[in-house]
Structure formats: C-alpha cells, structure tokens
Amino acid sequence: MGFLYLFLPAELSAAAAVLCENCNPSSVSSGRFCRAIVPPSSRGSAPPAGRRRRDPDRTEPVTMDQMAADEGKHPGPDRSDNPPQITAENCYELLEEAKRGGSERDKQRLLGFMSDHYLEVLRSPAVFGRLTAAERELILARRMEGRKVLAVAETCEVLDGSRPQSPQREDPAPRRVFCLHPDSQRWELLTVLPEEVPAKGSGMCTLYNYLFVAGGMGTQDGRSTASDRVFCFNPRTGHWSRVRPLTQPRCQLRLVSMDGHLYAIGGECLFTVERYDPRADRWAHVAPLPKGSFAVAHEAVSCGGALFVSGGSLFYRLLRYDSRRDEWEECPFNESRRRSADMVAHRSLIYRFDVERERAAVSVYRYNTLVKVWLGGARFPLDNPQPFRCAVLGDRIYCVSRGHALQFEVREEREGFLSEVLPGPAEARGSLVPFVLSLDK
Image 1 (tube, one colour):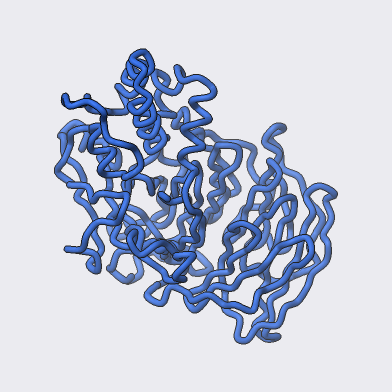
Image 2 (cartoon, rainbow, N blue to C red; image 1 turned 90 degrees about the horizontal axis):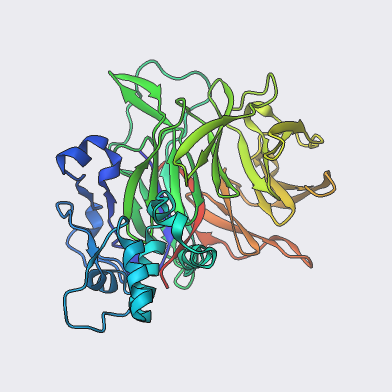
C-alpha cells in the first residue's frame, strides 16, 4: 500500500482519510460505512483547521450549519430555524429556493457545497445538467481556489521483470500522503491510503483537485495479480471513494489527466489505452499504442491538448496521442539513450530528466511541442544524484526523492537548478509520486 506526502500548513497535518460508502457497493444497501483511517501519529489530536474529522458511523447528510463549521469557508445561516440538510440529490432544489428567496448567503453556501462535492454534482444530470454555464464555471473555479502545495504519495514500485507468482513480503504499515508547507518547508501528513488501494505499480494523477489512484498490483487467493480498481481522494472533505473500475486490470501503468478526462496508458504487457469520462462515470478504450509499443515503466504527460509517452520499455521513443483524431504518431527521437527519471510539461515544452550517477549529473532535455523539435540537452552537476520523480508548481519543476527536493527553475531568462535544496519527507518509505493540490485558504 502507498503513502502520499504533502507540504502543507501545520494545522492540516492531522487530517484523517475516510473511505466512504462508495468504496464498497455492498455497504450502500447495508447502510454500513468504512471505518475512518487515522494515522497513529494523529490519533487523539485535534482536527486540522477548515476540516472536521468524520465520524465513520455517521450517515446523515451535511447541513448548512455543519458545512459552515466543518469547512470554515461559508458564513452561518441568517435565520434561527433549523436549516435544511444538504445532499447531492437536493442541492439544486435548495439552490433554486435560495435564489427565489433572495438569500445570497444560502446561495453561496450551496454553491460551496457543490464545489466541495464536485464529482458527485458532475455525475448527476439532475444537478449539473440544470446549472447555468456561469454556475458550472463558478463551482469549478471555487474548487481550484486556495494555496497550491507540493504533495507526495508513498508507493511501492514493481521490480523490472515478470510479476512474482507469490506476493512479496511488504511493509504492513499504511502508505501515506504528505504535503510541503511553502512557508515552514516542513512535510506534514495529509491523508493515508486506504488498505483497499494497491500502491504497488499503480498510476496516480490529479483532476479537478482530486487525487486519483488506478490499477496496481494486489493480492487475490494468495497470488499477486493486477488490479482494475480506481480510487480518488477529495482534499476538500478528507474522504476517499471508489470510482468506476478500469475495463481491464493494469499494473505499472501511467495515469494522466487531459481536457477533463483521465487516461490509463499501457501497463505490464499491455499496449491498450483507456479514457475515463468523470461526468458519465465510464471508462472506454481509445486508440492503442502503435504496434510493438507496449509500455512498461514509461513516463507520460499531457501538453497542449495531446498526450506524450516515452521511456521505460519504449526507451528513447516519443509517442504523441491526438485525442481529436484518436491516433498515435511518432515524434523525433531524443539523443539520450538512458532511462529517464521523469518527464513533465511546462507551457509548450516537455522536460525530460535523466540521472547520470556515474557522472554525478542530471541531464535535462527539452522538446518543443509546437515546432516538434528537441532543443538539445544541458547537463547539471549534482553531488550523488538519486532517482526522483517530478511535479510542476508555478515556474518550478520539483524533483523529489526521499532525501531531498531539487528545484529546477523554468523562466524565459533562466533555466537551471536552484542552489536551495528542500528537505525530503524524512519519514517516507518506498518510492514517492509527487503532485500538486489546492488546499483551503
């Protein structure tokens, strides 16, 4: 199982992860909910500001008063009678009532609820389909508000080669997610991955300020097997929930978000690709990778409305997917013949990082997606460079390992590693997957 790390304000460090009833279809009919997952270090501590620790046995909907108290974002009601309870099913009717009654405070509170529970609202034609275009834009914009922070999840990489026939002994401790506080530069615990989430060989990415975890290697009947399960974490509520499974199990896949969709690319012995539509809550196959191009231990990124895949079993090849034409094409080869550490996009450029331990350096290659040419590589000396993964935040690419977080600045007037090296999450175990989330102000 994997951990996520985020660099956040200290008051968020005690956040607990809750696996909601959507994680198990049988729990819906039985009325049972999954138990809250609280890291040992945070048991007995106060909940973080702006987020209340959920009671796992609590099943009633959230009221307006509770929203204002729990989220700390919306003002309390301006009337003394008991406010109606808010759910994903009745929020639109309550919004219309608030608009007819002229209550701006209640209107903003309801829009805030829709923003905090965006995926539930998006999947409901009776709600999202009846909102105006301005209201749809507003609830999404509000969801993305807040301070963007660098976060990492603890995972377990699958070793190169075939899947083991019997599960390897793993650390039984739950995997965590941490965030880096931009002021104190300390890593704080954000959440814990539920036990049901296979952290080994899974794909992770963010969409609509949710963290999604798909596929991976689980255990069934005492044997290791690829998983088709998909989960998401909502930082606005602190809840984990289950999403529609993949159409086929995948391990060592890459998960990428683009244009409001998720793409699950490749995996062990797979060249297929599937796309998730969050509004329809459905996965569907798209054009597979070119013949002979199954992708394992590869890197994938979206840039300029297209997907790019390289590295791993693809070696130095760079493939581009055009979603409008639903087809893949070969891009110019990269001069590097090394296995890349990671590949990320910033504006119209793709940055590929190669660790050269024998030369104590990191090589950085740039690909211009507009003119379709590689712009040449630059080598940056680094003492004892370690394998890392990357995430883009503003005009910096953070190259994160357990030991430290390097900062690669990408400005027009300057590109290169900054001298300041941030600390890595000292408590982290396994491999780290970095990403960016927007947290409450």
